Length: 209
Image 1 (cartoon, rainbow, N blue to C red):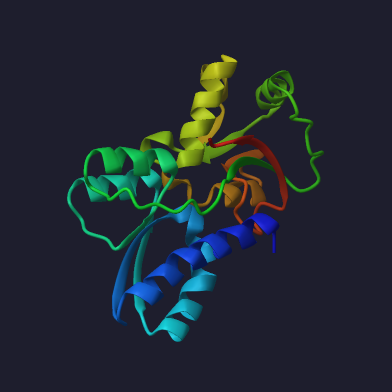
Image 2 (cartoon, rainbow, N blue to C red):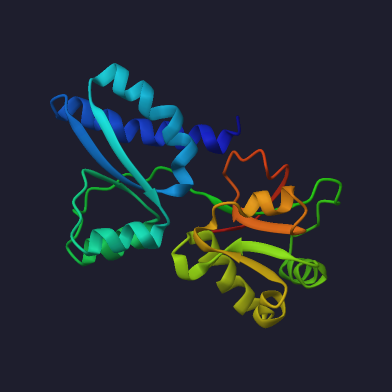
């Protein structure tokens, strides 16, 4: 298990432990970024057995979850990217009580057998993306943080149009890694901290922050 994945679990554990000490046994409704799906799958059953609480958890992209909260959907715990939490707090949809769980990266995955590229500079990243035959990444309009960050990076590099012409843009970002694993794309862009066996050669590129 990757160290980053362990940090996610540790951070979420601290979040839930605060509930186990402050609330009587009962249901806890959680609205959560899908980036935490695997961490929650490992943590929630243990937490439920040890605390007596039942966790009712719903996953989605950051944009989708934020939209539900803006419309007034209640939740006991919300796990989202910091910018979304700050905006919801400013709208008085959330309280200011917040715990930072993790700092994740956006990663690039290449097909097995491909040489892991040198992406240590903006120029090398730009060259790699222009040379790639096909690129899959989450649809920014669906609210996925990695898709939003990647689209912003393409704009900064001045290659948005060239890359979009050869891209597979995936709504919600689910299955991006599988496109590479099946040979339907040469490169996938997604959360670099995901413990995803379908993205076998993962090289972290730039931070979401």
